[in-house]
Image (cartoon, rainbow over all chains, first blue to last red; front, side):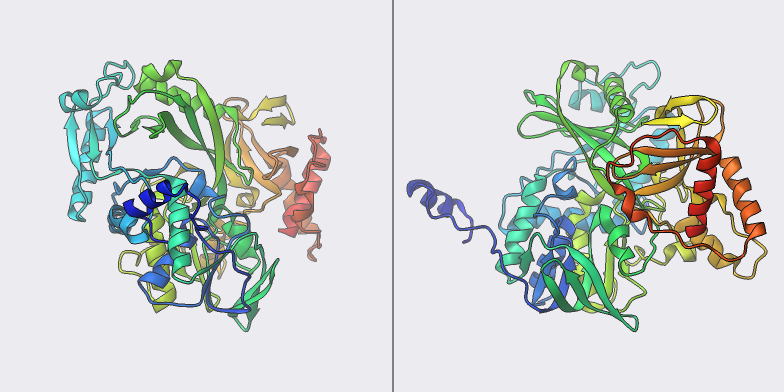
Length: 416
Length: 136
């Protein structure tokens, strides 16, 4: 069923009795041309672009839990392309362009809202570094605008400009950035892929890889053996665990990142705002809750929950730039498992095992990357060569010393 | 998380900073023929287990000692704590005495709650840690 204003009216007038399931629940076949392990945002997007842009057929997505149960449903929904490095910025700009046309592509309301992101700066030196970043963005076709304090005051009068320790001097604005409804992204991609014949198989745990003479020919799953021409793995925080079954050790550590939501409030925050002196980012959901987060906890973790010291640190960051949120009550917090890479940038590449491909290392920037990650992974799977915006996201870059380290923190995953 | 410091007793984890996998103690020989490969593996590749994980913590807000903490990454339970210097020394004497590496069961088994917080005294913790290091 194609969604439109007419389908909506039609259903409303007939008592909403004729809606059909959003995707099928097929039993797995014994062989597919391409199997994607991981039914999160990236895996579903990969399947969608394989089917829609690369004309591939006979594709399956295997998901251990249910669609949308992982990080695609556990993030702060921010979409942006304000990166500095050559290897990253074109990729994230490609992603933002795909976000802009996403709802038409997948015929699903992902509530994409380009409400802008402002990175605050608090010193002359930081302003200079933001000028550099803004210029790098514009050179790659993204938009960036430097705001001085007067311009910022007009947009956000509620910020603590006179903060004694970290006075707010202005911000770097990307107007095309914004937020999207994270669950809808998963559901929308799943539905669109399903309509193009992709089998989405939920509750299907991959227990082993079938590897012979350095060639991967399929996977063992809780629903039986599935053979495949090519296997792509996009399992975020579980990457090390899953790839260990194929005998690979990776430049990845799994860490927990927490996010927080307050009670619903009237509209107070116009877009996304980030603190330049600490680590804090905040936006307001369409329901009114303030959605915010900060640093990862810093220790390896596979528990989808964090600890209170980070909770406190994040709230202090918030109070430093907008004391007005101090009286809002926190409703929920949760944690997701991040696949932190050694340089803070992702990996979309072949592995040393033939026909086995890897999409990982998203750190805590995976949500905004969903469409481009899917597109580039689909390109790699279909053509056996990297997409032109993902040529530097290689697995062997650590051995070659060709790091993509936005933060310049070195091989220390908990600092990225 | 509470880390049971061998000298100072139970201390909150927020007094510490974490460096990462305890395998970072075993710095490869830079003059060896395979130093390139060895340093790539040492610097960038990680086991990243779900379950027991030996890791280096630095008591930055305390006595500034380095500890080897054995922690469950699924439950966050701290299982054993030892001084990193003891672990390093034990490893050195052990490798000097022995050449044949021992096989130890894989780490997956201990993911469940049975791994309750135990105060293990310094020496046994160091021994255990050294045995585990051999396994890795």
